[in-house]
Figure 1 (tube, rainbow, N blue to C red):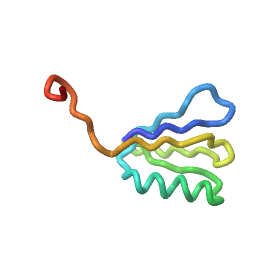
Figure 2: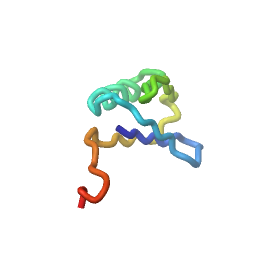
Figure 3: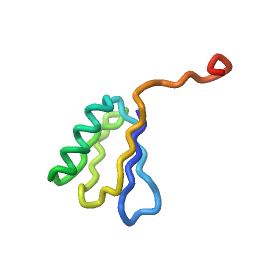
Figure 4: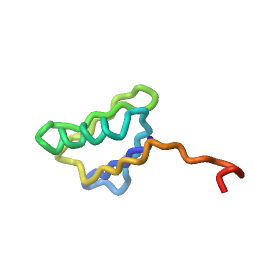
Length: 74
């Protein structure tokens, strides 16, 4: 699943590919917005991504479903 994070004062978005469920990501975002010092997510390769809560602009959580690719997807 793809997560897009807008960070204040940066021109580019931070895109994280993760195996976490959308509910887990939403819970981590809510915790960060409720006073936690940072948003912490693990990417699909096991790396930890930490974004200070004060720098968060927005978080876009993609769907957990895989879309079909190729000729069969028409």
